[in-house]
Image (cartoon, rainbow, N blue to C red; front, side):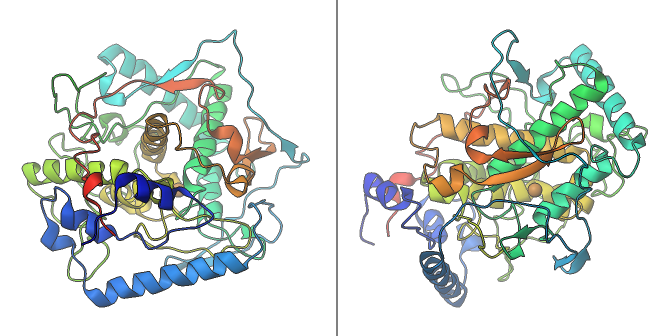
Length: 437
Ligand SMILES: [Cu+2]
């Protein structure tokens, strides 16, 4: 294999305009510190197909007029996706659409989003009480109120299942560079709605810190070192509005460790590992570490982390490989959705499960963590920064927002508690200097 240095690779892959669709994913595993490589190597035919598909995308994107996504609710209609019809067009607010820009309020302290397992008993009880109260209120709102939990879940469906129109084709916030900013905006307005119904502007969403394995390494461990690998118990109490019936059985078992390898490991040519018995703890722990190392620091390229460029009129594509979607999205994010199972396993229903918001809190924290590790990790393409998305605010009014305005959490009024990532957040672990093309 001819060696390509880290710098050259980063230079080639950073440019959005010269998209590198064919990231040779398997090569990372062929040369990296991989515990289960034999299970990941795919047949040549499948690999060639991926490369051809990537080249086709490259051609299509080069011959299409480039423009940022600009959403409207016009043209929204029921659509067939993930094997079924989805009828989840948003409740359109009566107010005219208002442009929304976050502004920093220096008179208010930055709120800290905390890791659920790192709260002490009293803090957890207080948070749980507030969240349950807020969700009871949202559950009781009438069906035509866009703030209701039901309508917020349907809104995720509308933006993900393809019912909303993107310049004539079905739209999807997943499998591309809009994944991270869209979900951050979604949680931002979800939090504002919760603050509003609670009458408490200091209320802050906390997150399920599933990447924290609690492994302490002297000199490298920082922040809270308590493991977040277990399903957060406040969501597992059947008497709570945070409970959701449609989930994999046994999540309330406090000894069960989250399996972040659900979508990483290939079995008999299948791209997804079907739900099955939980693997032994040492295997789960080892592959969680390995998986996080690759997803986070695999090659440090913006293209690989965010996924494909996604512009006005680009086709919706579902593809569980880094050829299309970003590495954190396709692997860690989707693995947790599949591990929880039930409604969480489908785009159209995922946000009906309250744990969705705690899960995505961690995803957006990891995105922020990744951006802060190097100064060149914020994409500069105007088609990314100027993309315009729609949401409902705490009054139920429709607001239009820009992707470029969601990249600084301090502007949005919050930051995150620091948590331990010592076992996996090391570029050397991901083997980046060994990558060859
Ligand atoms: Cu989503």
